[in-house]
Length: 63
Ligand SMILES: [Zn+2]
Image 1 (cartoon, rainbow, N blue to C red):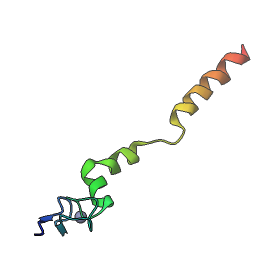
Image 2: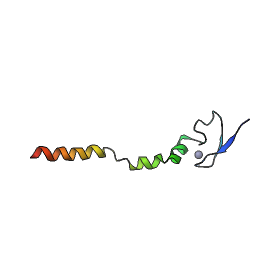
Image 3: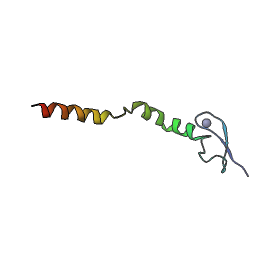
Image 4: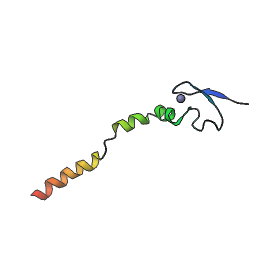
């Protein structure tokens, strides 16, 4: 017996078996979209925290 569900993200039919390891999503991409991971990635500023620390260390040694 095969249970078929619809991907919550794109509504594609997903068979509830080993064919779709990311079930109920049709793919990892749809799973990440649903989790909002795409939004988290958008907000990541590469090296943002380190940059802030560098500014502080640049100011202090000059005095
Ligand atoms: Zn999907």
